[in-house]
Image 1 (cartoon, chains in turn green, blue, orange, purple):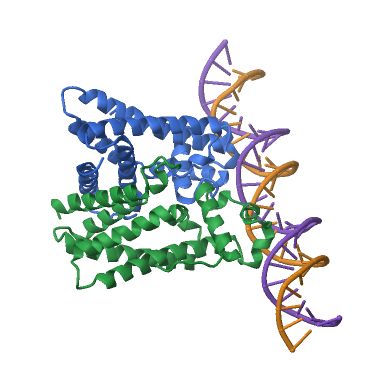
Image 2: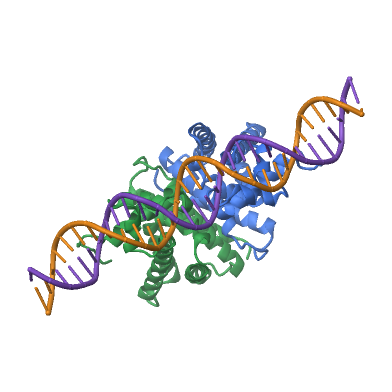
Length: 201
Length: 201
DNA sequence: CCTTCAGGTTAACGACCGCTAACCTCGCTG
DNA sequence: CAGCGAGGTTAGCGGTCGTTAACCTGAAGG
């Protein structure tokens, strides 16, 4: 985990605010003037940093998918051989939870605005997502050999749905602290997989 | 379950197609002309049936929330006393799965376009949703008394995320049949609650 | 047979939105 | 200090979209 100390660039400010606004009101529901206003410049000034509104969404979605996949690969490599598949699965779950808790707007966009992308960008994002899912599927099937591949894939998608539910958990600080929430989500994810792998195949 | 035999009214056709289109491309991403075209009339003809585009979304969202709540109340009443809380929870899960599998576009809209509503409509939908959640929370806490109320509420939201993941499960018929999918989701939901209720409170 | 009305049609208006054009103003740097 | 590029500004164009207006038509009812 690299900790940044320098100030965020204007580009990064824009992406962050755009993500928040897109998540709140949808891609088509946000105007460029609002995005500009959110970072203290006005509308057309954004075009000094991005070729268009679509490009902001594209960069956000490609970035998310890439980060998730990269992180998962790293966790897989770090633990390879020395620890069991079950520990790897725990690590994957932990990584996804961190992401879901720290970047709620992005996790919201991730499966909501994909269809607003240009064909090439959408294909790229889909490919990254697919790799991420397949990586999970392999680990899950190693831990629960009774699961057929289609069932494992369905189970993985469902657990993503469970983990990505964080935006619905109390907008304010009504939820019992980050650590407790992460632990609860982790337990539930493992429980869901356990139940999926217990019976049928 | 009342089975309808008569043909759907024009109003119902419109709502169904609007739901599909809104789910596919977002509320702002669909024009009234497209909705009209989907039912064989053109754009402004819709205004003979609805006062505006917003009204279609409002009716859809209020309808969804109402149906979910009504169904849950019915299931709770049917089983009251004679069967245990665990059976009631199974019944709730079954009802939610039926809805998620049969009305994927609606389940997608349900937590995606809520902010596009007029204040009064949004309040109404939120109230219905809250009642639905609270109903689940009570049943869940009866089955797993170790769970604190905040934890139970988080767990319920997360299980909704799990069950509502159906739109992501193979757009085509690649998933292993409706029955098997429903069974898998049901097992995972129970497993998730079990794991949530096992430890901490 | 005339009237009425539900349920369409097309034309067009007004607002909004993404984007471009043209211009300005600094802080560097040779 | 001249020049220049990075990063802003405002004005405005072109297209789209929700909505309204005005008109049409066919079936039902007295």
